[in-house]
Image 1 (tube, rainbow, N blue to C red):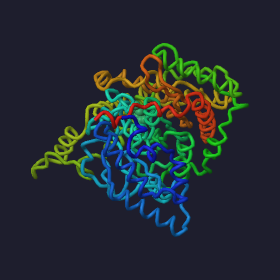
Image 2 (image 1 turned 30 degrees about the vertical axis):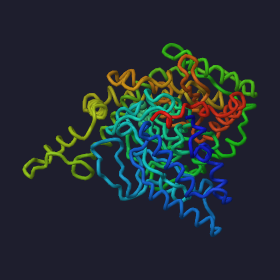
Image 3 (image 1 turned 135 degrees about the vertical axis):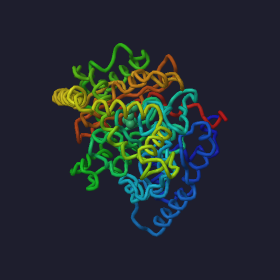
Image 4 (image 1 turned 45 degrees about the vertical axis):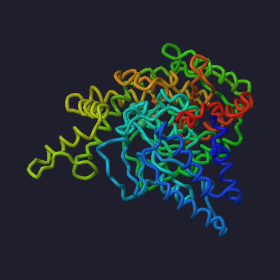
Length: 508
Ligand code: GLN
């Protein structure tokens, strides 16, 4: 069975914007649309495992409320009634938030993340929570304590990480939209390897309140979608100033929706980053990237080469700053306040309970990073590691400033390689970290960045992502480039890339 033959195909294959229009006009009800996606989840998620938690009853009840509001002629949000999935690192009152970790098993957050609140205030319908690498540390979703998510293009392969669940849910048509979070690439790398769109807003552009912190100076929630306009609409719903997040930017959200619609790159100057390509990049990734650059040139963009010499240090810099911040952020999981508590026999000391709980509750990658971070922050080493990394971070930001003085946006492949096999890199952390080579610089500098699908690599038939990076608060430029690529590629392909997805529903 292909996707087109699935019983609910007609509904689940539509874009979020089309669903929203039909729900608003009464052609479809939010309840029907939600039910179709819940059916799809029931059909394929046994195979894909994108979700850690689905609450169909709650989703249908909120869909019914949206239908009632529309029937009563009350004003509703631009994506009213559209269902979506939430990465399980953002709180949603009453729904378990595990962060993919055993240590939070059973914890029910008493409050909504600001992003969650905005979704609900805009009348969107939350289907459930998606799988991720434990505390968002990883590039494959294999570090989830609840088992890996599978890539809908080939279920023996990884869907990227840490937000593999959100990307796979969208790619497998289990949800038209999802929320991800990006600290080093966790929205963009999963988007790249699943043939979907993923956007990391400018740091401070979307609120981190209620996002369980991995590395507070890098974390940023953003949209996962199948089309550029859908991503823009979701971006607009979730972005904007939040007094609950001290790093939130108090400025208007760039007009990403108009930019996605205009899709105009003529007169734009696009810089190809010299350092993000070459050795270690798969031939098919480079081929599709180069073709997309040529396509942008044919649409009127001016293409230049730009050098960012310090980008080669981005990976080691990130893998000092991130562990340093996460070792501090994860110290709150002390067996006293949240979730799991092990070894409390009434006689054990607090330290003994803490140690036993962390030993049992944290997985290997989380422990590795806590140890690296604690070491990098320890007295005597602080300057040599953390302090040095912060200086290199500044040099990387300056590279961006320099590059953006020459070009409106910068481009590169989103990832060096396509989706690899589940299990292939679990024993080689450095090989796993290399997936983030292209995405990390934008987290370190805090600028806006996105991944758009540009075809399948000829050697393995797997999706390739095209990364676009824009200056801080120029998120709209990402959507102009993404929209232009999408329009041109869809007409060349006779439809979206995901039309070629082998239906995972047929694999049961
Ligand atoms: N792969 C990166 C890491 O393991 C990405 C993390 C993220 O963006 N959450 O740290």
